[in-house]
Length: 265
Image 1 (cartoon, rainbow, N blue to C red):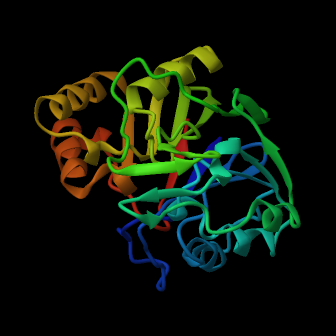
Image 2 (image 1 turned 30 degrees about the vertical axis):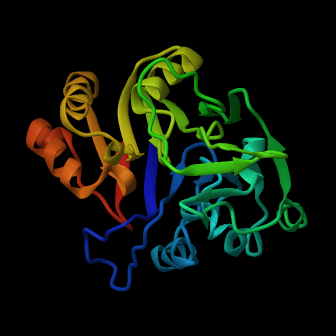
Image 3 (image 1 turned 90 degrees about the horizontal axis):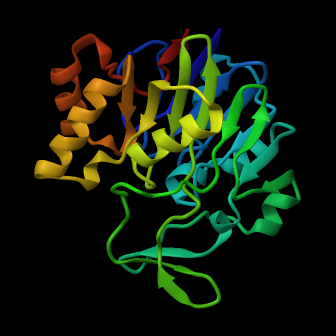
């Protein structure tokens, strides 16, 4: 059995235990053969919620990409636990949105002082039956940020090539854990199925549907309705889109927030 615990999301849905907090960000624990931390939220909220929930200590951490709302809480975990870190090398590059810095708020040297850093562009099995997907090939729509750039020796438009997700092989199919899914949900699902060799049946996390409107959004929603056994969207999905999915899918759409637990078959 695999369990996913949401350490931080934009909202709190269930009010127990008392004291759970939310923030604009995402972090989750994947409790499989090992306990893996996926993203760390924006501040220390994810770490505080982990302590409040009395959760198991993670042994590895995977970063979905190098934006502040997924990496800002990293040092809280590195200073407290012995963790091995997996990430795309671009995650450490400076990046900006509308002139504001939105990248990881720590130098690579600071992070390396606390942990072994494994940089990867290709898929890597970080634990048995758990893959960090690396760079996602993009055949369909992607969810990028206008007026954003990354500094790779020189300033260039940020295609967020470091965006990756976790694919977990379960008895019931593949579960996909998304950070922000800037690579696009359809691209990410197709690549996860190619890497793992099985169908994606369950999805948890940020789908970045806020990037789409009108007919394109409806096209993606219809695709989701036909594709998965269930989906638990949060973070950058957008509340309106979460409600649209709930209306379309009924019980197959799970509304979640900080502190919620999902059991994978």
